[in-house]
Image 1: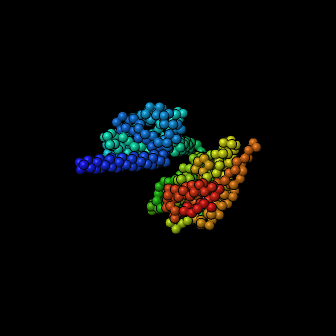
Image 2: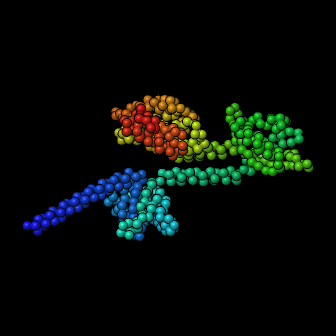
Length: 465
């Protein structure tokens, strides 16, 4: 009987142990499932795309939804297109360079950073910024964990700027080559008498000389120079009077009424027997057309073609430069503005009406804000404004006025779409001490406005209004 009781007790203990072990296993399974779900959510929500691939074979192991969204396809189609190979993921012309870069960087670091192209499923080229970390798995394999950012638009802007710079260089060199053929204005200044002789051709090509008394010491020569260029010209002239040598200065001179012409003056100053400057001669070329062309090209590079506002790149550069020069006691407001229901305008009324809507929003932003404020289109239906030296009340007033102006119905072909705008506002230096941090704060406030029902503004850290 005692043995039976002992055997029964042992069996009970073993049964309970099995039960506890099964419960522990089930708990671990649930925890593993929860962790995997959390990891999937984290990878899906990361900006850009995520990929892992075997460091030895290059076989693609994992891609997240962000990367698939960039290519506009599902995972099966993605893997079939690139044959599960990281090497084939990189454009053929870039493969050798990328392999060499990876081999070089991985000798010294456990991470690599690359820029390369990939061929999309529609034979379009996609530029990527690639940041990867080499890690070792539990089974001893090595794989790269990569974060990929689509920089195609940024590369296109860079290429455009490069082409414009090359065009500027060519134009500058062209003007140099034909400089001798231009009808320059000749100057001859006698220091002792303060007399300036000026020579120029008339419409018939005949050169005439004119003498100007009391030219520099008396100030007569400065009367026709644009006030914004006056200090530069006086500084250059002062240097020429101190030391003999050659130099160049560009300035504007009055032409007719309020019109001005741009000139580039090449000059030389000469010493007398007492090491004192006694004479300055120069030849001034009309460079007005060159300046206008440079301004046109600069404007073309900085402006959004549809609205005439600053484009994304120029807006970022100007905002960053302005904030970097600001004192922390200054109060600037950064507005992020999103057009509500714009997609419905395009889908329902057509892209032509959509373009008109973007111009309508841009015009109202111009009208609400000051001429001194930086206003840009960041892409699509999103805009940005940097309002300098303002106050909280003024910023709120501008935001409310913009909400009221944009709120309207867009109609075409008997159909109608209601539009409005959502606004997020952040303040320098309270919400951010540089462009990046201030942008994130304003963008976060914009998100609150969108989530709170649209057609309102939100001050960073407050509820939408």
